[in-house]
Length: 384
Picture 1 (cartoon, one colour):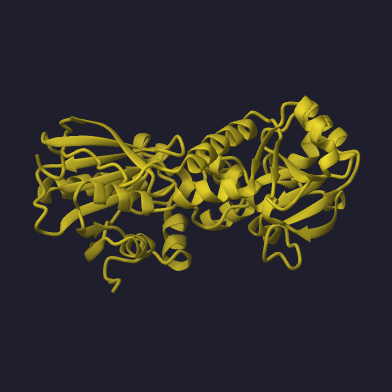
Picture 2 (picture 1 turned 90 degrees about the vertical axis):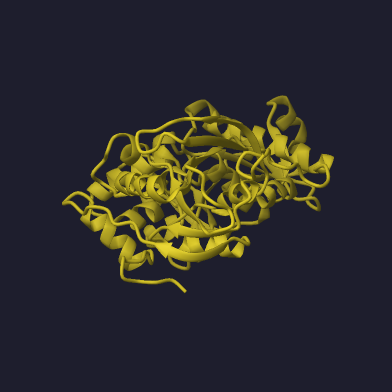
C-alpha cells in the first residue's frame, strides 16, 4: 500500500479528556452564537463571567434578555480592524464600547456593518481594552463564521443562578484557547474514492475532517505522483462564486482550472480547503462584495467588517500533505504566505510555479490589490 492510499495514522497518544471536553464545549458555544443565544465565558481565577451574544444573529427577545442580565450596562465588542475602519482613535486592539440605552437590534447591527447604512457613533461611549474572556468570545465568533462583533457584559458571581435559569452555556477562556491551539493539526482521514475527472481519469479524492470542528477538506490526487521527487501541489481555498459559477469578480476559478490542467500533465495533489472568503465564510464574503461595490477594495472591505486581511490557516494543508506521505513539493501559487506557512510547518517547498489567470474589467482591481497590498507574486518574481 502506497503512502497516498495508507490511512492517516492516529496520534501516538490519546487526546486528554480535558481537551475532548473542551472541544465539545467550544462546538456547543459556536452553535449557541449562530442561533442567536448568549454564552458565558470566565477566567479560571475570576469569580464572575462575561456574557456575550453575536450581533449578527441577535434578535429583539435576546437583546432584552441581555439588557435584563446586565442591568442595562452593555458594551459592544469590536475588533481593531472594525474600529480602524470607523476612524476610532487608538484602535490597535479589540475594544468594548459603552452602548446607549435603550438601543435596538437594527441600531447595533448598523454599528457592526452587519446591515448596510450610516453608522451613528453617538450611540457609542467610552471604550476599554478587551480582556481575555472577550478575546475568547471574538475567537468563537470567527470560528462560527459570523461577523466578529458581540454584545458583552460583565456579570458578578451572584448572577450565576440567573444564567442557569436561562440555560446559558458556560465555558472557560482556557478551553477556547486549548481548542484553537490544536485545531490545525487535529484532522481525521474519513474516506476516499477513485473519481475520474475531465482533465484526468486517474484521480482519487481523499476527505479529511477537522476533529474539533465541522470543516471538511479534500485532497485531489491526480495521477500517480512519484513521492521520491518533489510533488506538484496546489492549495486552493474554496470559492463558490469563482469555482462553481465562473464569477468574473475574482481569479479563483481560473486559477483552479489552470492548476488542474497543470496537474493533469505533471501529476500531483490539489488540496481543496474549506476556507471561503479568505476564511471569513460565504456570508461575509458577499457582504464584502457589497462594500466593494461602494468603492472599497477587497482587503479594505474585510477590515470594514472586522476581519484581518486574511483569516486563513494553512497548517491543515500541511497536516494533509504529511498524512499523504508528501514532504517535498513544488507549489503552484502566487501567494508567498502559503509558501511561508508550509515551510514553517515542516514541508519543503523546493520551487514555486506561478498561476496566470485572465484579468478582466470586473477583477482588475482585485488582482491589482493582491499584488500591491497582499504581497502576491507575479510570474516573473521568485520567493526564496
